Amino acid sequence: MAEITASSVADLRKTTGAGLMDCKKALVETGGDFDAAVDLLRKKGVATAAKKAGRDASEGIIETYIHTGGKVGVMIELNCETDFVAKNEDFQAFARDICMHIAAAGPICVSREEVPEADLEKEREIAMAQAEGKPPQAIQKIVEGKLEKYFSQICLLDQPFVKDPDKSVKDLLTERIAAVGENMIVRRFARFAVGD
Image 1: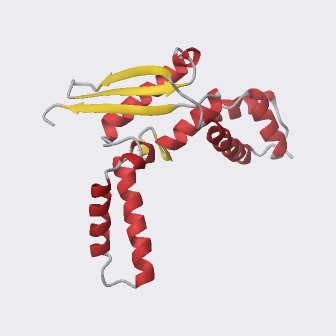
Image 2: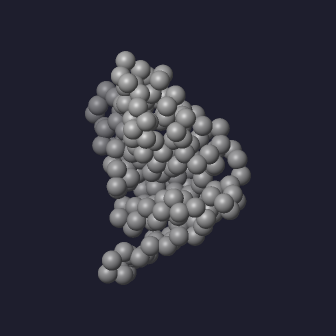
Image 3: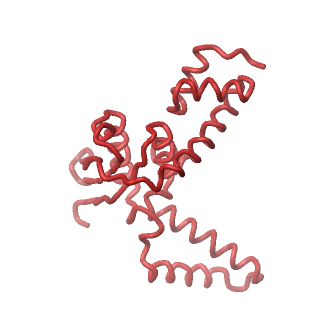
């Protein structure tokens, strides 16, 4: 078992954004294994975020971002439960990060639920045509895979985050919910590009 020091707890907190006591408990539970503690905190964070998902998030901010050169601009509404969190610098920085992501990645909608059924059916038909001639059991997996890829291209929450492509925007949002202890929702956004 590795020694659990104040600096290892601080490093874990910096990496995960979890509270000091949660970080210390995770390191104790994992015998001082830093990577295992990160995984444990992420799993607990997902569970915590899931519990908070049903709570009303009617406070928040409108954040804007104009990309260098003035050719792309983004406006986003990011909601939380309290005005206290909405005024927090970390919350505002998170909103700016999401704005920059939208400017760079160009999503069309916030979540899968917002994708029009007609668009989804069209993508499904294209995927079925591309899978033609394959065994029937393979066709379903191919279609599902193509739809997942489609969602990751057009849905903000499914996209890999531009600053950390190992995480989706939804993963990032879940981590923030767990760290702050309040539900957060990307309510809507608008992306403007000169000439579009």
